[in-house]
Image 1 (cartoon, one colour):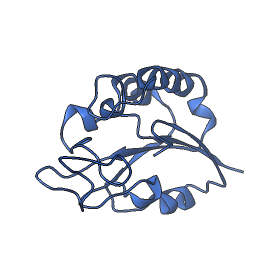
Image 2 (cartoon, rainbow, N blue to C red):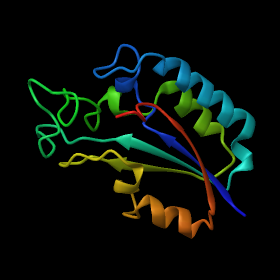
Image 3 (cartoon, rainbow, N blue to C red):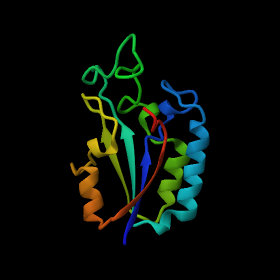
Length: 147
């Protein structure tokens, strides 16, 4: 049995002070960073997902000037901006991890709500990354899982 940790959308734009904040987001980031420090070595793989929307695009109608907060949203997690990066607490913990860490980006030019809709820098989807690592169980933590 091989386990992975999937860390969902712990990005500054989803934390207090960001463009689409979730109350308690910074506390979640700190807690997940502590967990990675304490238990990261127990996993065969750590995968992160990030909203990674293209600049100068409505991203398939995902962004709107007057969002309804169900299917349209204000601009957030625009690729290359600080708000789209991993939260600094988490990023620091991941740099110290002894486990393989891979990131998937989702939402380029189309709405995407699942990490399984994203791809890693080598083009592999999350499902393929998990399969390739022999993962049979996944623990999931993150922010904005209610949207």
